[in-house]
Image 1 (tube, helix red, strand yellow):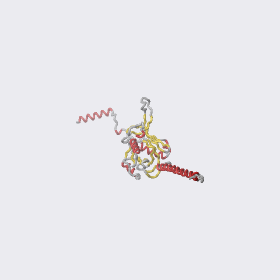
Image 2: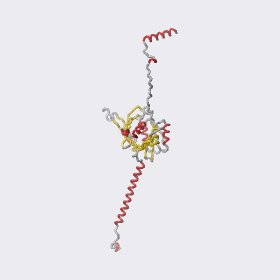
Image 3: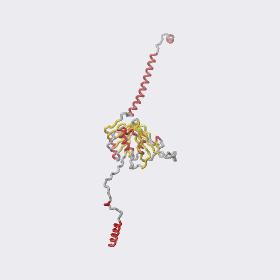
Image 4: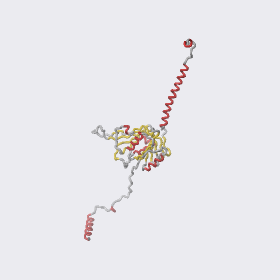
Length: 300
């Protein structure tokens, strides 16, 4: 045993004499600068609707769920007047964003987008809805892949546009760490402001023309769907309520538009009846009195 210890000491002495290339831990330069944790995008979206949605509204929700892999779908909300329950539902599902579709009269669709639980929230009117199955577009993308968000420069020209852009970025921007997200980017979600309305389109990114596979690569866009138009109504400070931050003065409710259409039809009916009465009155005025020397009177 002493011989083994002497041999180990001798080998250690030889290694020190030759020079050990390994540096001791005490001699190493240690950077004392604290390492900042990497920021992670932890956006999760709760997607649900109210009672009374039609098949087209339901298909639109299915298309959005397929486009956004970081969404969690919830069953329908029974009461339309208890919107204060939505932040609690989002908290139960560990979501910090909520998209709520509210259907009225089985023909009007409203979309609420909100940051839960503190807000803000935006109420929008959905029009011109066309789903993927309805459009039959040639574009296609991988389910669960991430998309590029493209916003019109008009969003930066108004305060409500900047706020809407920020909320849409949190909702439609798929985080790379999402559970069902795939590490591919093959489509573009575009948001354009025209006539104070937000136009939504979804395009596939094509690097080559499928009809000319041997041609040089050229990037092009092919529409996939869905497509719809959003009209902002109000922006609230809180989640699904609170102080009104912005109100669209140009918005007219669909009920008011239908009332005006019915009123115009009623006005046409009233004008037609007035014309018939005027015609009957003119005929009565043009009618001549019976002549005393008429044949029917003399020989009658």
